[in-house]
Image 1 (tube, helix red, strand yellow):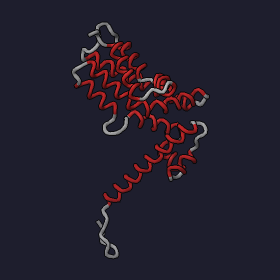
Image 2: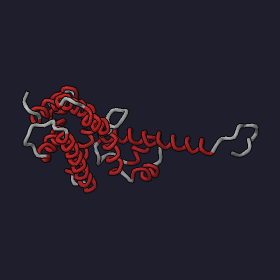
Image 3: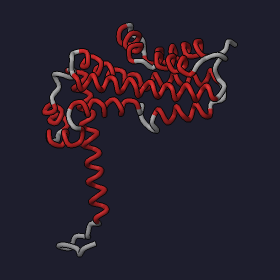
Image 4: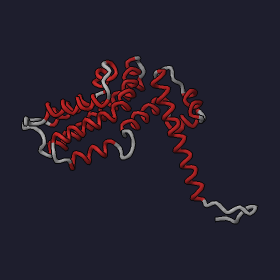
Amino acid sequence: MGPAVNGAPPRSRSYDTRRRQEAAEESRKRVLAQSRELFLANGYGRTTIAAIAHAAGVSKESVYKGFGGKPGLVRAIYEQSLRGAGGPPAEERSDRAQATVADPRELMEQFGRFVAEVSPLGSPVFLLIRDAAASGDPDMAALLRDVDEERYQRMLHNARQVLGRGFLRPGLAVEEVADVFFMGTSAELYETLVLKRGWTAERFGRFVARTLAASLLADG
């Protein structure tokens, strides 16, 4: 800590570092928020880094440095969406439920609530990726393959967890359970029932919970 200048108290190096880190994190949050808004409003192809930077109050160079361009931004937005609406990440809460909930039907209801929370955040971004990939963008086609595979691996993880608890009816293979989870968490199902048919997220989550229970649990 150096001497005071003009009578002002010295500022510690750690304080300055913390302030810079906080400012950088706030800048990142603004970029992600504005990116999400612009991408979903205007589409992937029509949204530019310049427009995102202007809306977030940062330079284009800082956006490229932080995210590597539009594909990196979309991936970051999607991954942020999967964390849920706040607090501990949704995947962490899901793992805790799978390890601690004692009633299989209550666990399916928990899964439905997670879907109702995460789908309104993540599904529109997945659909953005899908549509950009369909338009011929190779970066989005690669990202679509990545996020689909990552989601399937997560569903395999969930399937192994619930099978290990002995919650499901006999005779189910882990791949079949994973496929049912994969269907229930799909953006395409959300698109059909919520975006096209006007269901609320809560109704959608209850439907997913009932579908999982009917498909995977023993009768009674």
